[in-house]
Each structure stands twice: as C-alpha cells, then as structure tokens.
Amino acid sequence: MNTEALERLHRIAFSTPNLFTTMIILCLSFLIIYELKFGILNFIAFSIALALFVPILNTKFNLRRYSFFIAFVSVSTILINTLSKYINTNPVGIFIAFITTTVLYFTSEAEVIKVSIASSVESLLLYPNVATILGVLLGIIFIKFMNREINGYNVRLYFKRFLLSWLTNDPSYFEDVLKSEAVRFKGWVKCLRIGKAKLVTTSFHPGPLRNIGGAKLVERINSIENAVFLHSPTDHSLNPVSADEVEKIIASICCNDVKLKPMKPFDLESDNYILRVFPFDKVRLMFVIGKNCIDDLPYDLNVDGAMVVDAHNAHCEVFRPNLKELKELVRKGIELERELCEMKYAFRKFRVETNSICGSVAILLLDYGFERYAIVVVDGNNVKLGFRKEIEDFCAKKGFKAIVASTDNHSKTGVNTKFTYLPVGSDERDRVIFEMLEECFKLNFEDCDVYFAKREVEIDVVGEKFCRFIDEVGRFGLKVAKLYFSLLSISFALSIIL
Image 1 (cartoon, rainbow, N blue to C red):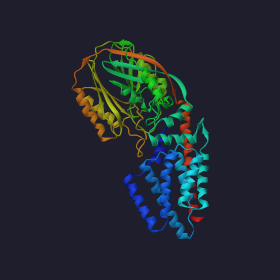
Image 2: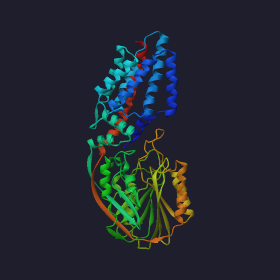
Image 3: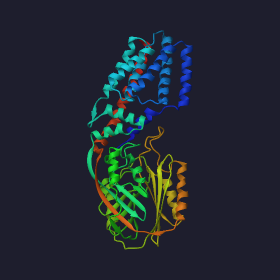
C-alpha cells in the first residue's frame, strides 16, 4: 500500500504557523481592518460567532487552529476589500463562505446541513449581502463531489474521519473507516526466547500510521518486559484495523513451548541480499538483510520451521523485491545442515526516542565461542544504509558480527508536517546507539535456555481492498485538490467583481 496519499494530506492540512506567529498576523490584520474601515465590528462578530459554533458543531479547533483560521480570514478580508475598492466594486463574502463551509465540515463531527447554517450565519455577519450565500452553495457542491465510493469506501467520509483522527489524536475516527470493510485473517505470533530476551514476530504489519490500527503493535509488544518486536515478511494489507485487534495479538504471545538447542550460525548471499541464519535444532532465526535496499518483503517468505525477519535496514525510495531470489535464499537457509554447539548471551534494552527512533533500542549479544554476534534492533522505520554500515564496522572492530534491524514502526509516520518519516540515522541523536553498544560490550556473557512457541490468532485486517483504495484515492485526491483550488479562485474573483 502506498501511504503517501495519507501523508501528503497531513502535510497540506496541518502545515500551520506556530501560535506566536499567528497572533502577530492576527493583531496586524485587526489593526489594518480598523484603520482602513473595512468593518472591524463585522469581523469581531464573525470571530465571536465562530467561537460559539465550535462547540455546537463539535469542531476540533484548539486555540492555535482557531487563531490561524481567524488570521486567514482577516488577511483574506483585507485583500478582498482592498481589491474591490481599487476596481470600485462592492465586496461580497463568497470566498469567506466557501472556506468556512469546507473547513467547518471537514474539521467537525457535524453534517452538511448543520455546517451550512453555521457558515451562512458567520459569513453574513462579516459580509451582510445575499451573494455571500453563493459561497456556502459552492462549499456544498465541493462536499457532494467528494461523496463517492472507490472500492467500497466513501471518499468524503474517508477524508473527514482521517482529518478528525489527526486533529484529535483519537484513532477511533479513522479506525471506523478501516472496520467498515475489514477482512478476517488467521495469522500467527512466534516467539523465540533466548535467556530473558523474547524475540517476537507476527504475520501482521505494524501500520498504517501514527496511532491508528496496527501502528501501535510495535509499541505494545516492546512494552512487554524484555520483549523485542521483529518485522516479519508482511505488508500493509495485514494492518490490524484497530487497537482492539492489536490486543488480540498481544494476548496470543507465548514463549515457552519447545526447548531448543543452538547450532552454528552461518551466512548466505545472493545478488541483492544477505541471509544471516541462527539455527536451532527445531527452528531457525533468519534475518534477510538488504545489501543496498530493502523494505516490506512478500508474505510468501514466511515458512514453517523458521522465524524469518525482514531486517528493514537499507532505506531507499523505491523497492521491488525479487521473490524468486528471496525464496531460493530462504530455502537454502532452511535446508543447510549444521552441527550443535554451545552458546552464551548478553542482553540489554534501552529506552530512547529521537525524530527517527520511536522508543527503544535492544541489543542481543551471542557468543558461540568461535564467533560473536551483535543483534541490534532499533525501533524505527528503516535505517539509512550508511548508518547501518557504520554500526557494522564499529561492532567488527570490537570482535562482533552485527545485524542491524528496524521494526518498521509507523507511529512517527506523518507526525511531523515537514517530512513523512525519518529512517534511523537521520537524527544526530541516533548516534547514542554507539554508546549503548560500548556499554553492552562490557556485559558478562551468561549461559541460557532457548525456547520457542507459535500461536495462531485470527483478527480483522484492512485487506487488499483498502490498499487498492489508498492507491486510487491518491490519484483522485489530485482531482479533488484541483477542484478545490479552482473553486477557491472562482469564489475569490466573485467576491471582488460581483
């Protein structure tokens, strides 16, 4: 699924100045409106009416959003009145009414009729003429244009509930959209316990974004003592639709079914990937590492007798996995015979958050006597290749072969309006990982028991239908944007010339 449409919508909708800047603009606008006699009392009446309608419509405005909208309207009023005065016409409120109607509809829980009445009252207070109502009608036309279905999802409700979730930080608004066409899927949860470290992987994907649906999956698993989320080959069609479905996955985690014996680890390589295998007598832990690029791997790579991990550790803009190459690599990793050996471990889990790390870094050290490994699992969405190699080189100098993996955590996706997300290594503070490694290298290795368990779990996921919808709605969104800006231009021109 291409989540870019979701993320682009966020950046457009919520890229607003800070409150201090907004208040400066607002104060200057008020002063200009007063000095030029553009109807300061009308503007004050509009501002008061908006404040009164916010709770009536259940509009998700905080002080910053309210102030920004008032500032935007004040600047628009100055432009409309100045241009009308220049060409010697009477200004009308079509543009203000259009903006007010669409903004109040998509940022409130109210329906069209209620919003239209509120918008009419507010706009007529600012521009008391009949032509102003034309702006409300244009707003209704735009809302009706979006009232269509794509792949079973209503586009208007999709955008409205998406915005409400983002404005309130309440995932339930958008989760209701995901639930409406949810697909039942029987998946699994696997856990490999090495000493006290619990390596957990599932067939489900930790998305779509922020705190919506399965985006809380990584945080919930990592919140369990000594648990570490590992990203399996999976994709966005297997995103859980809600927090309740995530809890069903959590409730299915078990780590103590079968006792395992360690065997000698090994690496396999293909043109584009490295497969690092940690075999045990009944199960194999296998990390798929991208040599230059890696993202979500096909679900078909999950096989019996193994915990296959998508290391998600070489960020790139476009990734097209070679399924044949990957399947052959995994097949060899399963079939290659190894002998039993001794293994000791050391484990630490750190709490850390930066712009690209979502909450934790876990470091598992394995000592096989003849070779030592450092498994570094960073809670983030992919890793810059250069940063990964820097960690690998650092560990190599200390006598460890490193595996750097990320969790593909989507909880920071789109949170900042300046970027979609940052791969690990983008924030200078991410270099704290080297200090953590130094601390771990001083730990004493301990003997350990190893256990494995697998549990089936059936939950509601978004399904392929929603992924196709997201791809299509991204294209439809361009038409929506063109129509909206066309109506903005028309309503602005009419506000001046009528």
